[in-house]
Image 1 (cartoon, rainbow, N blue to C red):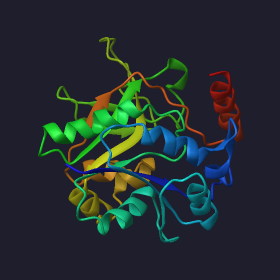
Image 2 (tube, rainbow, N blue to C red):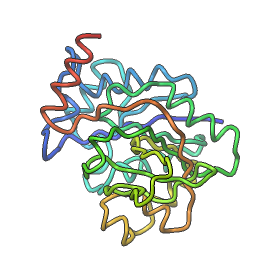
Image 3 (spheres, rainbow, N blue to C red):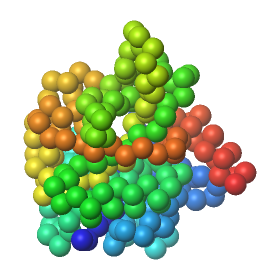
Length: 241
């Protein structure tokens, strides 16, 4: 089974322009993400997919692999699909977000191993226990799963709503995805769906279209970098470490 790790990296960002090249403890963020992904054992390759020459050159400068993709893509999934389309040798594609510089490589391996064990699996992602202070934050996406660990729904609202106390945990969705390559190409070609557009959550397109998403649990909380405040926090954490 051949696995590749693709990191979509768009230069434009409303809240943090030039995000991939922002320095974290002396290195561009895209380099931090790349180096973490490269520590994983299962992927055969790590590739940055970008639409900006500055990001492309930065990756080349630290010895990484990058490919240029269209500037017209509406999502990171579309960028992934463009790269995967010409890679018929690949079985599984793992999408590592370009703003997760602290992602443990063990999570990448755990997702890849799911596909090695289950030949019918098409898509997988991760979750972790959510902190109570995040319950009402729309930016913290919640996920609920069935008894077999498959996603029932993702939402920016609190899930499940605690009308009755039954000891059910609230879980935060960790934005890393793994796909069987053929499914990724099919999924990216689907039109956006009503729930996806309502919640602004692309993964709902798969659920609305009748596909299943396996959700692994992890203790990793993640520190996604979307704002200058996030950047300062990650700089403190990595500088202290």
